[in-house]
Length: 112
Image (cartoon, rainbow, N blue to C red; front, side, top):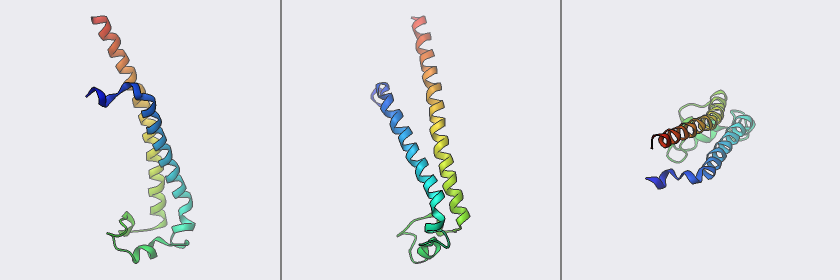
């Protein structure tokens, strides 16, 4: 499984992971800021009115069970925090793992 780890592609992997996290972060923040005038309970296309005319199988959503502006804001901000934390945790973990792997390589060189 040496091809699976591919240490020589670390930069591409880093950019892809951080780029995806940045896109998610921007999307969740945009949803949190713009949802009330667009799809809020008194917005241009209110979610409760839209979901009332649709089946769950046609438009699957958590908000079929219950919808409120406060719930949508909470879900959006939670997604933003989760994507930011995921990006930062991956950064910290990747630095720790690269440090640990370099220490293992150094200790392996001393043993041989």
